[in-house]
Length: 85
Image 1 (cartoon, rainbow, N blue to C red):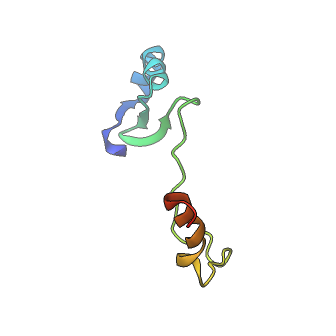
Image 2: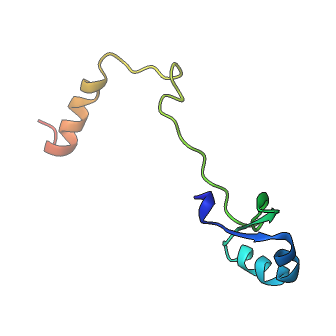
């Protein structure tokens, strides 16, 4: 997605700095290039940071599942649905 960002050269950035900053504040980051080579990415400071990627198994070994997990509290659950016998 980096290639979709607007790229401006240093001279253009100096000339249109106020407009470019307004775009960045409106969540439209841009890249400043020197001699066609990207140098910096400008983004507003208050822009939300990307959420961290969650990975499966991050708590591996920290939890123990009881052997009777799938039959735990069956009596109590049945009583909640059907009432006491």
